[in-house]
Length: 322
Image (cartoon, rainbow, N blue to C red; front, side, top):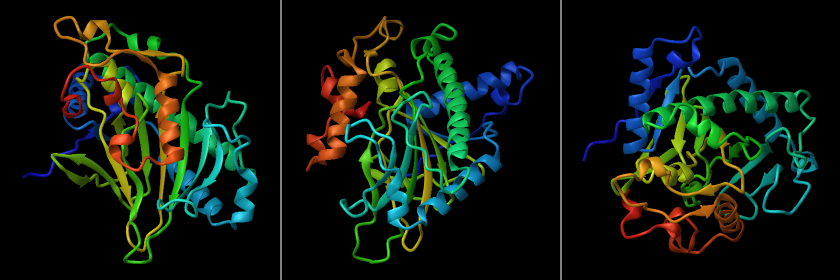
């Protein structure tokens, strides 16, 4: 069985300014759309996020996560609610050895911004802004690939308050008998997820019955499709199952940006995409779906079957195979 070819796409027709060449844009739309339909994941270069912004944010992360736990814990979430922001360390209470600093949209009142190292707050906001712009571009590309009216998805998803960025430190696995997983296999709750990797590797996707590594391309961001996009497209685009494996002897740093919809948004296959086919999912609110997923993260279901996924809303058999 051949290893899937996850494309690395040059996004410069959409980021270089001057309007871009229309034929080049069409090629990018087709390549990205086909990758999302087949794999649910791809990588992008010339994506508009300056290399110095990425490098600076990764360096801030290394500095912050190297602090003693007492210092980092000053920036824990303000609330025990399922929605949170701030510093979280799961390495002592979970088999998944990682810590994170999470921020939501700058308008959120429960954001917690570390002031140490100096400048980290500004750095977090800068990275958030750039990754948000990238996600909007990808959303527009998917809009055109699906043949939706110009700007339809942007108008449908025009409230950015639910967006989230998590900067992760996965602790190196030192014991050969230690569980190597950093994050269990899962699908995302985002329309689009944009990922910065530090070059260490460890991202894997489940395809054709096996886990396959997505090797970071130099200067690239990884992008994957989440559950809401699979539902809206009526299964035409694939929400990919993926996980993180901690490389032996190496710390891993990555940044995940989730381009989300608001919790009150009604989710169902778009009428424009079900004209000649039956809907594959019943409708639900994003808030209902998200709360159940967050409870899963907190309570750790004992089996994959017990976890809440979009298959809970499936109409008919074999939705998981879309």
